[in-house]
Image 1 (cartoon, rainbow, N blue to C red):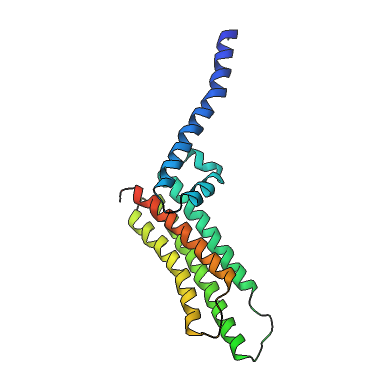
Image 2: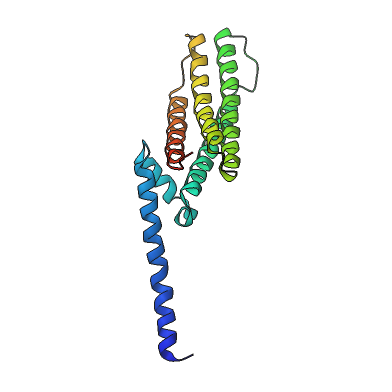
Length: 181
């Protein structure tokens, strides 16, 4: 191989990845503009290096995976908030019951988001949409449980986690809308 060919190969090697990254950044930006939460979409997808090589379906899968991780983390957090010893205080008993139920609801949300990944792989986008919407609704069910016991305050930390999961789900739904199902 001549020096000229070696220089050309080196040039292509150095230039080509930049060109692909720029094109993929454009797809990510275009995709995120179609969602309700552009900044969340951009920061989430940029945090995953595989987004640079993903198509729109792949971007939806990345966001659904982020949502599943979020829901799983919230479920684990809630489980860690359960008391280790029984307390006869009725208000504490109601709080424990609600926290346990919420932990289960967030676990169900994670399962629904994982099911949406399977739906995406099978290109059954209507089912993916249904599973993502269900995941967001599980967070609502948790919050609504606290309304049954007005003496038990809905924790601010859980309110923030609920809003985070619902925003992630809305981003996924916005990306799914682009898939033309």
